[in-house]
Image (cartoon, rainbow, N blue to C red; front, top):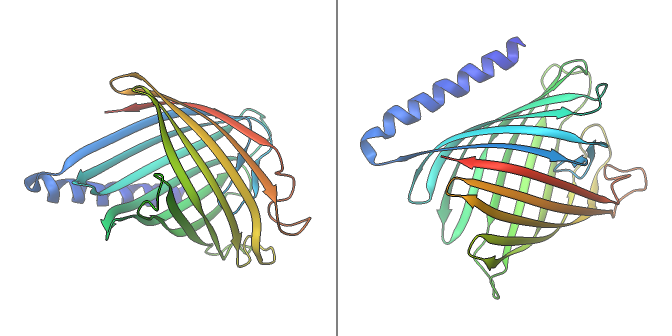
Length: 247
């Protein structure tokens, strides 16, 4: 709890500093709150985080100026199964456009509660490249996780790359289709898998009102690595729905 409090205070101080320094530079404050329910959850490395239903709540505060910005985010996972682990994640990051590519990078702190209070940290980056045709956007995501004073080795690099395309079905309805594959250099105490999984995702976004959206998604995954590798037992559909309030 002390570590979480310290990180929370640090994040708040950084955000207040960014706000105060940006007030005279025409930056726009942004905020988003979302509440969702998922049939299960897979992580960025392809591993199964939650085998059964889990709800999540997220709050994001940021500053934006012409496509360049900063943000802090807190996200909580609360499984409906009482004995399952609970998790709280904190992010501090920024984004900008470089030569037509959109770059998002930052640091994260993951805290698994009721599981020996496992804490670990990460540095992450995601890049959406310029469209290559037919409005198809290639992307890559990478994250290096590490733990401090942990009995379990969490250290390792995970990565995922693919393509995505948005379809405007109606002025209030859009569809995002995504195809990707990922691997790792050895993480969470497991051996390396250059190609661990393939993933497909469809997400429908519906504008309910000026500041309200409903997002419904379906994600499927196939194990491409070892039978007992990090993506084991994830060859199935993961469905989710979330209400998003932006203000």
